[in-house]
Length: 370
Image 1 (cartoon, rainbow, N blue to C red):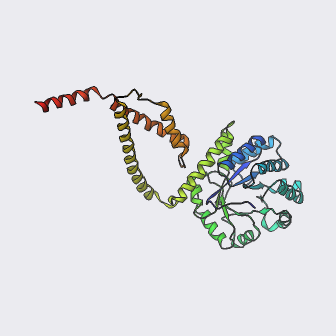
Image 2 (tube, rainbow, N blue to C red; image 1 turned 45 degrees about the horizontal axis):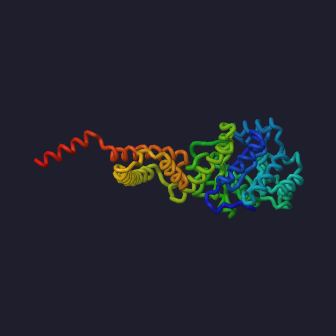
Image 3 (spheres, one colour; image 1 turned 30 degrees about the vertical axis):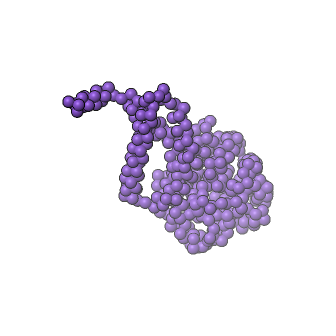
């Protein structure tokens, strides 16, 4: 089962299939995979999504208006599997659509479509015997939700019957982006560790690189759902490109923060770090300016122009190619455009010195000769 969580934290991306249509969903999923998502949760639209917040509720409504069914989601999964063999694919559904298809048929068709695991959000573990039996027959991972309010006895059951990974809910309530992660998630993961060695993914509320990185301190993966669905809703015609940029930024920034241990710093630590970085940045910018001065002096007696647009575009493109985050290529490009403006001004001063400055130098030389 290809649930690869070696790069901690791995990103699990949720999409509501059929929002705004199945063709767009396919493009979004492939773009998310290319951008670094390790697992895709294929959300099956449902008319009464009690566990979901308003963002995913609206997405389900839009998909249902398109007539999207579980069978169509499974067909979509087979198309995704043709393009990517390494990504993990999970059917994320309420129980009702599965029962309507029939448990045995669903599990068989899901496996034939290339699905690796299933998560039935409203299926209690105590009532999952037939579901578990059919899933095992078809080598499907069974993923269950563990909540902060779950008792230790229930967590033991979840750990016993889960395969692939366990989905730990970061807080009580419905899905949806939040400004801050609660301490409930870390406590829940710590409790689960007593009963299982399976990877643990934390979801419900992750929408920023800082939250994603924070999850990486204590869990193997972070699930991002509502933030992605919201981007799809807000960017008609650019859904795939927008999601790809977001996922790429999230993975790069999150991994970057984790690698440096910065996800464990408090505000005071951050401010000290910023002061250090600003000093280093000032020194580098002055070194860069010194190079501009030298080039300006060399240009003084040549026919080379002050403004060389092709060269400046090459400089910015080179910087963007080597960018590893957390800045986006667009942000980095804008910063370097401003730097190039300043450096061009410095070169111009060396090539065409200020007349008043020249006159002052001449006057000083005259005085010395007297």
